[in-house]
Image 1 (tube, helix red, strand yellow):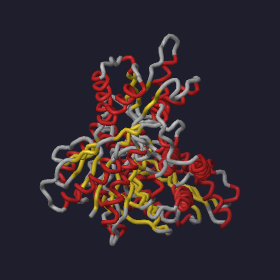
Image 2 (cartoon, one colour):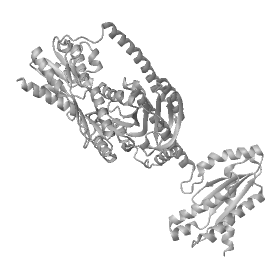
Image 3 (cartoon, helix red, strand yellow):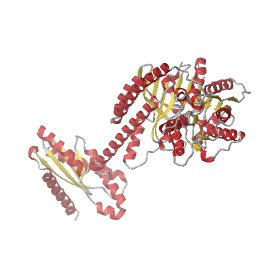
Image 4 (cartoon, one colour):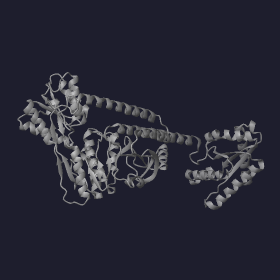
Length: 635
């Protein structure tokens, strides 16, 4: 079976435990689990980076999966979650929601009240705390709202008045805990007996800031957290917190989803209850699970691993910044992916190479991209795949498949993390990494993906600049109306043609062509028709160029052709052929006017001593002689 899991912030301990609760029970059953996740985690203001990150949740086609597990509480964008729920309903696939029910889903809740209630009662009854401050999560977050409500309710049950000024709203980060406690350090503000935080990261931020200010925990003030994260377990003092039960919730969600997939119709909701863990930060004597020596070894091992991956990240970031072409990017990316060595890695890019360059050309000409660059295109290609130690690539496939069929055939019991590739809100595609456990243990891979994002943007900017320069070069040397060379193009390419004539010791010739009757056509039929006349003349002259001649629009109604290795008889035949083409055009065009042109020429046999401007002038004079003779013949 194929199961889709949607949750944000996979770098957080709570999400990792949820995922492990799913994987530990799904993989032994032979199920493939596709985890759609991102690194966006901003509650207050949505930046373009977060927009690009959350776009990953718009990617999955749920008809391709047997069931879905969704933790919308970790996806902090209501429009995105509404879109997900709507698409799941349309796909008619079973879905289990974590914490917040989606319409028609089975819901597994991680209850928040019991743990908070137990900690407040413990602080009041065991440690005689009377003033207890609370650092909450964001106002629009389901878990944060429940934890804050449980704090207020339990305080009132014990006859304690909570003060609104003692409630701070953070965003679950270390920094928001630091910011909250700094307000107590202002002169005239009294420190409370205890500070409860709605998660462990904010609690650690509180402890660090207090310790820097000279306060001791728990001797001077009690601090508690929530989630029982790894940082809470190894911190000194060990943090009083709540074991939430994310692993059990993940396990329960998977088992209920499996029942639904198998056709059971009476699958009920489930609830996992939190359990308070009283430890050193509140003054209790619960010790670390590790000895001092074990903690030292853990610290050294983690430091060595951190240094290793930080060096790799630093090197890759520096190298990616200097890339100029997509081939450079591919070579560089392969080198670092081999170092990371996941079992599977797929770089999935939006659209074909042809579409990419067409987009660049449109933008170089001042137009728009021709598509919404913030969404995934239907056609996806994989220029870089790494499968069990070998690199390969795959051609185009539809995004609903996520990966080409040959990448999924015969594979059971695998897990894949699907993450966005983007720069700000510009969507490059997505990355799929398979059976790579390290991505669930630390955040190095997410940082590496950010380097890939920046590298792709560097290459895109280089390509955009090249396209703009190519466009500028085109405008500089080509006539916009006719598409043939202008005078700048003539000067640029005439040099090479003259050098070839000298090298081969062959004659150099110039034809000077002046369109007859252009003013009359402009006056009679309008300048738009006059432009058509000029373009059609240029087209006929282009047809006459068969041996590398240089055709130039020299003025408004004047063209110059530079030729080498033509004798005078050849030039006369060349001119005759042009006139024949003009007559043929007149017979077929059905125009009310006739196309005509006066042509003069000059042949110079001494190519080594040519003055190009001089022979053009001679050809021009000869053209006027032809034009004068035409006028005389009509009298």
